[in-house]
Image (cartoon, rainbow, N blue to C red; front, side):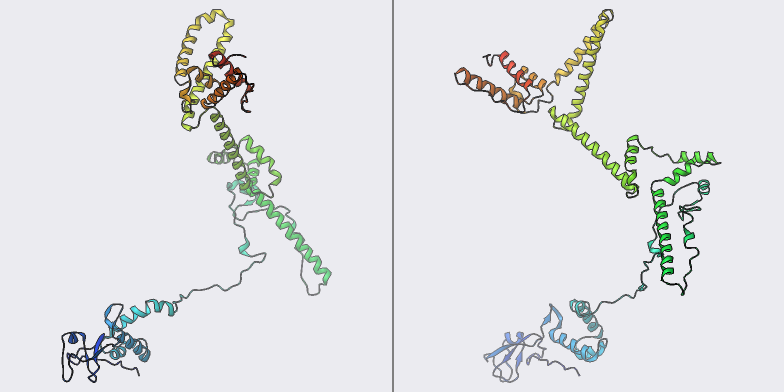
Length: 442
């Protein structure tokens, strides 16, 4: 039987002492609530100046819920243990201050669905049908069958080839008489070891023949040989075949692709068609990338560092090429003075227009370079003709002038040019400085 917890009441106002209370040390069994103690209640022999002590009746609320004190929680657990889970009416009577539904909801919320229930109560298992049969990995297991895409052929070509696409079989297979090896085999209890070994050898021969047959069909299906053979077989319904070809317009492989696949033909038993196509696409991407790199390096040599400048550069180069072609034609036509006199004016006007357009953006590739503003017009033309950066030209110019002044002072020195400087560019720079009066010929 569950034990009923002891309850305490105020001797003055008879209120149940659910939390802290005041116990008189001089009076026997005399308790007061906090409100009566503060108001200075005196009853019988009890006086307000008596010694007292504060007691805790273990009736304080849990988690700030004033409806359920610790004594109520204790009574709830004691009642569930005594009367069993589900007997909420007897548990509520045991607590004394709670109803049946209130006790049920409080226990489910604070114990079953809370952390205690999540840790202690086992999870509900869902009944499922489990397949306990052993997996069959034998040679005839359905799980070992290879999934393949059927070859798309017109019905007429299927009949002519004797090919069944859904089964991936032919009426006459490769090594069609392979089944004769085992067609007359019989297993008998009277067979000796030699007979058994002979029959096992026949089965092994047949197994190898089947593997070779499957390998050939796989290669024929992957590389499209079945459809290729069907296209070479003469048929009665040639119009139907032409209609099918018109429906399926396939991109013809290029000569380079055909040669590439021909080189890989010896490896076809080891490489699938998809791997060959992927390899070819990767090789083409590699070639395109290398070509693009060479093109960007060429632009970089011309002083172009942004892709936005490429279009302008190509326009200028096209104009320059056109100008060269016009000059070449002009030289060729010098042999015919009668025709040359009539067309010379037009050519000059056209070249003048192009020259004016070219002069406007003559230094387009050098304007963004460091040191461009420190050069004269002649120096800019010199750098532009040599495709040399202004900063590099200024450095070489200072080096040459410095060494020249030292030699004029009687100090023997030899100008140390950079190793990557072209000899032709070096001579052009020295000649330019001599003509401009910067240095004198020694």
